[in-house]
Length: 281
Image 1: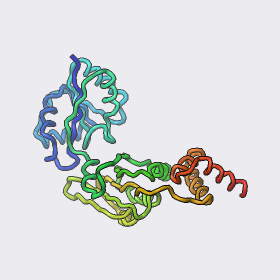
Image 2: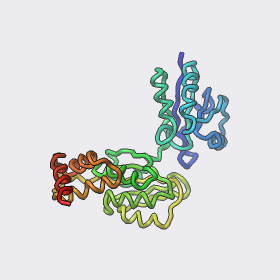
Image 3: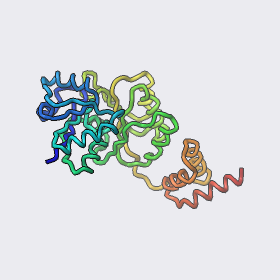
Image 4: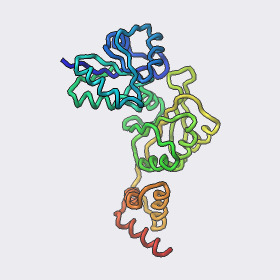
């Protein structure tokens, strides 16, 4: 008999949000794999739980090395509980590698549903929730960040991002540049904690607000692109958009394809405009 891998959600702020099953799983697991064993001790103290199984660390720095060890234990019949510092494992946290390896080894994987900053922020944002996509953390470098945002500039689903507080103003500036200053968004701060705050408004206003400095755990929810027909762009504007993308690090071929998709035009038409502009310069 093989064991079971259990992914357990943990509170993102308020300890009272811990799912009841988390207590029994912590007490009954043969192995508890924790992103931070110190945070785990704090959690068990708050819940009044005593773990009897072996506690091991499982974080970004040792995921690759520790995964085979945990899969071997699972194959031997162990019940392994995976918890991260807050929220659900695998959602911008360690867990994906272990789940993939367990599935590959035909080991049962189940979950203890729990708090999620993604869904909580989405529900509180006041923005459409029928269709959304989670984009995680944006790149730290400005050029790469702009490039990633441009990839989803035409995305009509609501977008959800995580961000560090000290990078929030730069991120909102970049979003306002790419998505437009009037695109609606919500900055959700310290969800479920004492100083929870949800700041809603156009990206331009939120970017100005963030200049004053924002603290805490941040989730940003952005309205999807409006449903509009293909833009009617002249050759000069097509060339300008290609150049902007190239300056951000995209290869010309990719930039031309992206601009053609935005404008609803054949790639050949955008390519010809770029070539004509180069010959005229």
